[in-house]
Length: 220
Image 1: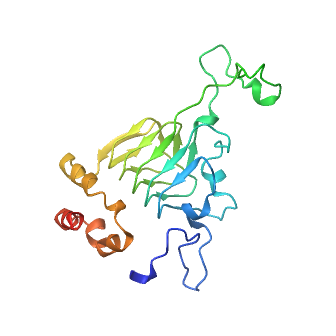
Image 2 (image 1 turned 120 degrees about the vertical axis):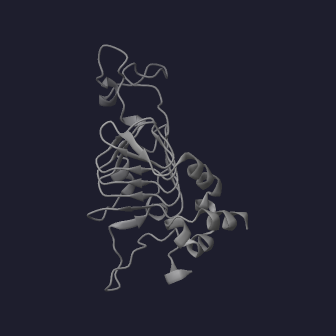
């Protein structure tokens, strides 16, 4: 593998010139042990300072007992300050008050949930090869398509198309990275599902603009 590319279960995959590990960059699969978070191979987070609990830093309202999940695909890139505001952060907003009386004590009656608690919310899903810029916020139930770029400070809700560039609050699609035919071909190629040796062998085509080479590699 070129340059002894690190395994996906390596906690600190970046080595500094002095030979020490960059402790503020982690492959998330190695750094997170949380029953409600799923992360694909080689997705990483990089921050201004190390964290003892990357799950809490990225998804502070996702608890072990939360009904929803946070699902992050392969080869995602997560900058400093990105937060996933998952469904367990929600309050009821369909009545007169949003106040969460239940979290401050008092048992449910005969197993009936307290009326101030909202029902279970949706999963939050990030596709493959998604770049989330500094201080972006991804709200509960967002579904980000593969290849998307989320701009710094963007607040993402709802569906994000594959290979979209999103910016603003609320985030809007300012453009698609490629035309629809190219996006369709890229999604069929799905290079993120290849063995990493094949990915690295075709690094130039993946990071460049060589669809024919990628399609031949996918067919092989």
